[in-house]
Image 1 (tube, helix red, strand yellow):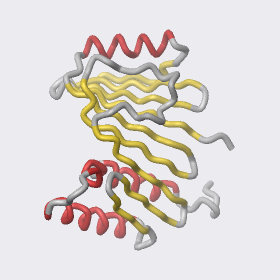
Image 2: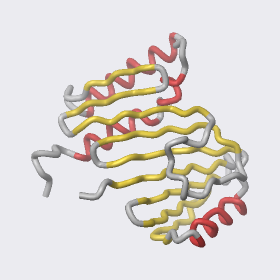
Image 3: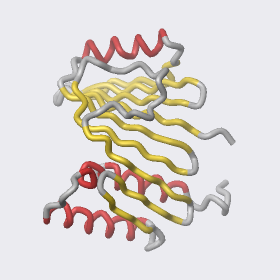
Image 4: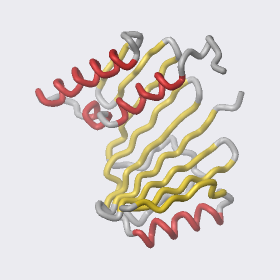
Amino acid sequence: MKSSRHGNPKVFGLVLLLIAGLVVIAACGKKTPAEKTSEGILSDMVAKATEGKADIDFKSGQITVKTPEGKAVITSGGGNWPADLPEDITRFVAGSILTSTNSQSETGRMWTIIFGNADADAAAAYIEDLKSDGWNVVMTSDLSKGTFTQLQKENFSIQLSYSTDEKTLGMTVILQKSE
């Protein structure tokens, strides 16, 4: 049962997913015509998904989305480890950071980091490091071209997706606000 105070969380989540793919565009100071077109397409997609109930503001390195369900701010950090990621989360150092983003909404925070040149064995060793730091594996799945693992610790969740073809590791850290 959903609360009318929070609206439809699926719509708000969809808005965030649509935007997350284009955060890198917003990180560029001077926008190319293709980037401006991408922003227009994204705005149209979000407007359709939310039946015109979302307001999007593109700024250099930041996208703000406001819907009746709440507000989210998504920031691109380029190729750096997010400075505001909690220090007790062990860094994955076996790959190079291609991009990082973070978002904040009324329900919590989310950081996403994409690593290139990541070795499958190093990704598996990283999961073991997290487990030794007190993280619990709550789900793991072998996919046709990689693996997916989700770990949990207190209010935090880490999702790791490894692609064998691309040799990339996608890491999403989610902090759920306590009610």
